[in-house]
Length: 168
Image 1 (tube, rainbow, N blue to C red):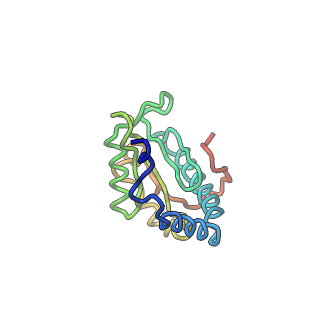
Image 2 (image 1 turned 90 degrees about the horizontal axis):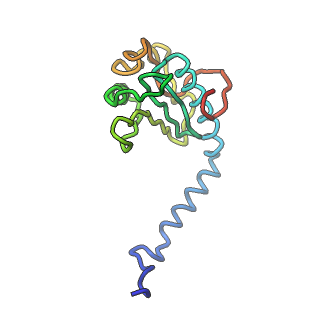
Image 3 (image 1 turned 60 degrees about the vertical axis):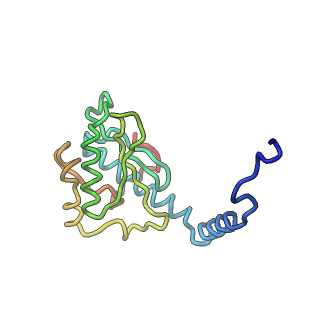
């Protein structure tokens, strides 16, 4: 039986490695890694600005264009926000055409992190809109109810120059 331990359906198939090499070529040729770093820093700056304005955001973390905002009931104790609140934010954003996710595979009661993962080709102009739309984009069922106000959870104008790492 030990003779057949490394056999698989796609073993030796060159399609997977060919696709991976083509993806790597595109990422390098189109400068997507540099764009991811720049737009990720912008996203983190804006999430940190939201954290400064909303006590319900207990922590912001991420790298590149994969970021999260942890919603809490109490920032001092970091007690997780009710999962219904988190899902209300996700639902409201979806209704407004902003696709975000939330953790769903943690222990019950601890699925309280909003997950943002924009496309590698994200640009500042594509992620922002008119000021009136940004005001309307406050999650009515989520952040606005929890903290008195809300803003869209995508990059906008920040100018704070924070690096792409957790907020202080």
